[in-house]
Amino acid sequence: MEYMTSSPTETEELGRTLAKELKNGDFVAMFGDLGVGKTAFVRGIADVLCPGVRVQSPTYTIVNAYRGNPPLYHFDMYRIESEESLYSCGFFDYLESDGICVAEWCEHIEPFIPETAIRVTIEKTGDGPDCRKVVILR
Image (cartoon, rainbow, N blue to C red; front, top):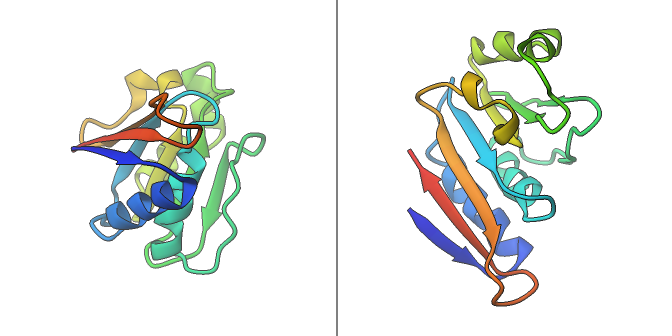
């Protein structure tokens, strides 16, 4: 499905909509350039799954775990360069948990994305500074 958003608030709302359909063990693979709204989308997901948490991009920590039912694991794969790096941050252990995993910068881990992943691509449209095209593939 393809969606258009015109503000960070609308991008978050689209994340909230997707969150209502997620279930334990789901993996959301996010793709898109710097500053397109990946973290805003994750804020929307977290708002539904883990109300009240403060979502920040886990750029340096690689993964942020948010308490919820189910828990939400938010990855930033920008600095990941190898399968060994995925092992060291516990990526494969999180995949086997009952939580929901959302990973930004999945361009860096393409061979390791689960086949059943929900793929979300966000890109600027050029129609305005905050206009985005969001494609969700299940």
